[in-house]
Length: 162
Image (cartoon, rainbow, N blue to C red):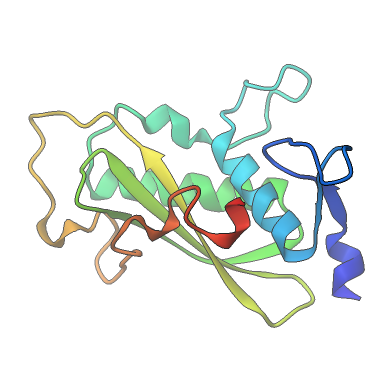
């Protein structure tokens, strides 16, 4: 039943499938690609649907601190709640890696109608100010939260990015 609810769609990024047609994805992979699409699209980027996307792109030049992490968490929750009704977001953690120009957004969610917890790490690249001090412990999230702690979620490193 849950599989029917999830459905199938074009692969993102769009590519050619093994039979020469447009590559399709289905199930959990389709939902994961839809989440990445929502987070990677800035509002106003799509002419026929200008509200679509996530406003985290407004924070590219924001300082890497707890306030920015909180704003990112809010924007991710709000955009996924609006644009991806097939999932229930349980938690969003924002953390920094060794490079202060990358924030890792760890989205923990489950597909509605299943009891299967999932996690997706989305790298968000910022242009840090040289005036901002580094955060203690490398975490940009609120107290008590932590992220993946490394580049394991970078595009091309997970099985879903093949």
